[in-house]
Structure formats: C-alpha cells, structure tokens
Image (cartoon, rainbow, N blue to C red; front, side, top):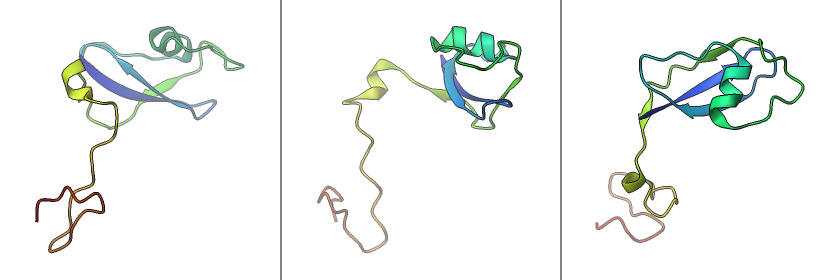
Length: 86
C-alpha cells in the first residue's frame, strides 16, 4: 500500500501514513488516528494537506535491515564504504 506525507496547517508537522490511492485525509484528527499518534494541542479539525511526494510503495521485503542504502558513487569516485565496485 502506498505511503503519503501530510502536513498540518496549524502545527506544521509532517506525518507519513499508508492508505489506498483513492482515499484522502483532510484533518489532523483523521491523520493522527491513521498514524497512531496523539493529537497533542492541535484541534482535530485542523486541515492537513498531502505533500507532493508521489506516494511510495513500502513492503517488508524492501525494508531490508532498516538502514538507509549507501549513497551512489560519483563519476570516477569511490564510496567511503568501499562498496562502489569501481
């Protein structure tokens, strides 16, 4: 299922949630319920907007070790990790 980033207009927080492409989240209360986070001091009816991230597909197999992948090598350079293969 794709993940999307939403930003709250009141508290300026960005929260990532998974949902179907056909679904839309319009307020902080719905976003918090979906993400399993507390409302805090922000009203539940505060508007949120989906950021233009395009949505990302996340699956257990793509998570691997949970570590970020090594950066790509620059042209003619070698990665500090020594994993560039050049």
